[in-house]
Image (tube, rainbow, N blue to C red; front, top):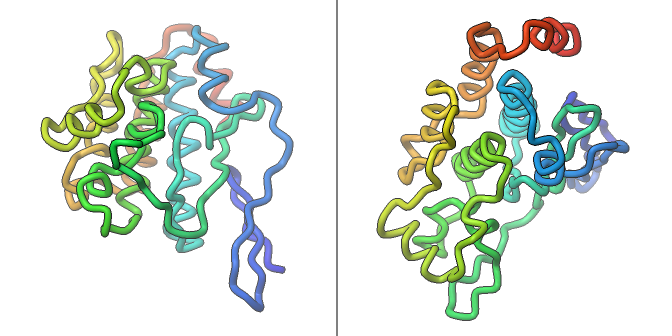
Length: 226
């Protein structure tokens, strides 16, 4: 077995079969959705740091491991000591059902690349993960699942496809952060940015002291995340 270790994910690779296996260390804060629900008072430095952790793991997955996650959402991101770690990648293609019997909840549909919803013959790409990342970042800004109150999954899929339907920005979201996640969830996958670009922009934002809402918080987080 070969260990592939990065600060936001851990993998094992079988050198004979070349198969990958995810290895998760103990996490004390559960998944991202639950963490956001329980920590509604997070400031923007903290929210941006969580987003940066996720972008870092995704960038490593794409560029160092050569894998696509295929299942990125707020329940497959885990939190330990306030730090985000990506979990539960899908090692084979997912089957997406958009028939009238569609059973996926609205929040799950939001994380599926619109190009996959439009064409069931499409395959997951790195850009599909970036689309999902855009909705994860929106959830970090809101503390909610996307479209969680939408009653008809079929109508939601139709609106996403035909109207480029997305969630509305949350009041108080920094413009740079809003612009960044909107670049992630663009309908045309060729117009989306890379995980590396997301990480770089979040790094810049993280050191923008105009986002600081508590003079001590910025200093504290710099000591935790140098």
